[in-house]
Length: 417
View 1 (cartoon, helix red, strand yellow):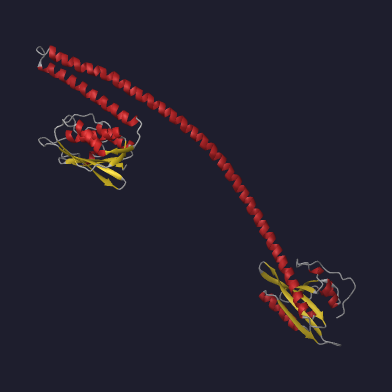
View 2 (view 1 turned 90 degrees about the vertical axis):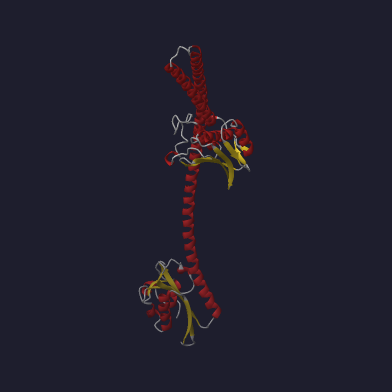
């Protein structure tokens, strides 16, 4: 065909691939019938017609003798895979070669049409065909890559914006947290100072009350003794009984105040833990109880524990003296002290053959002022409370296993040194 050299009016390129400037004849066909939607100027010149005479007509009407090309268009439309084809058309005065490069037009991941490049030449040029195919495929591929890059840039911009918002929120949260931490630290310091001051005032008050109360108690004991001594001949039996009860009540109140002071000291004093030899503490406690009636068996070995030695001595003294005090009538007391290692702890046992404790009272006996045996045994009900508080201050725990009329097995555990 002879190319038309006159200007040709073409419609805008609907494919978006800017085929209007391509030197090779190119068309865009859409649908199963391959209706021409766009033709570039080069194709118009090849066909010798204007664009409006071609657009809207099936591709098969443009080149009716090229049936293989129409079949290729249908195959590309169905499969979505590009192809290239060359065929010879016998014409006078010499044969003409037609070559096609067909590429699918994709929308929403589905083929909607094809792009066709047509080349007419008197000779079969393999290199030229390959170059044309590479040019059209590269053009389409470049457009796809551009769209993908634009989509990636938009997504990256959105992610950067979200990350910036997250960083701003994190920065604000960190500032608020720092501000709250400062306020909390100041509040803790203030409360600690107030608590320290309150404890000091309470300790001073307890010692003052104890001193002021114990002085008149000692006076009551002294005057009761003097009354019995000087007026004993004139006092009736009832009068002597009253004087004796006054003296015993004063002694009990004095002992109660002494135990309260001991509980206050063990609760308030500074406790610094360090390695303590259990054997040394046991020997010291037994030397203080050597005048008590009863047999005490202290079996070794005695390992070292992490403790506060004065507090540990108080705990062991209270438990051992209780074991020697709460005995059954006509049964000589037998007390056994021993220690055993349990992993990272050392458990100290104080076992006796005394009156025992009923199960319902075994958790209550460590409370302040708990006395199970009334007037049968002397005591203020504070000794075991001192034991529990002391063991807790040293980071340990305490307990009891007991059977009524058979005896008790008190124990406490401390960390190994």
